[in-house]
Image (tube, rainbow, N blue to C red):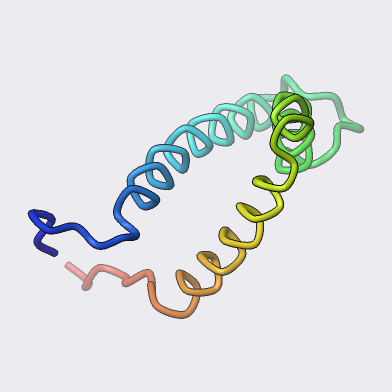
Length: 95
């Protein structure tokens, strides 16, 4: 895609990719911590722990911009649907 004239989605895409990288790093670290035996046996699933942590750190933003976060949640749900429908993982050819 030629980004000399970016689409209206481009600023959102840049933020989404940046955030996805950070969330992947957090989730990978948490999963490695768990798989290395450092988590409690009765600990909730890693994704649930991350969701709880995010909810905690985003709570003040929710207090200030609750309507914006509700709109953002709707937009992210639409983005997830488009990504699921339009982007596919392709296996590499056998060597």
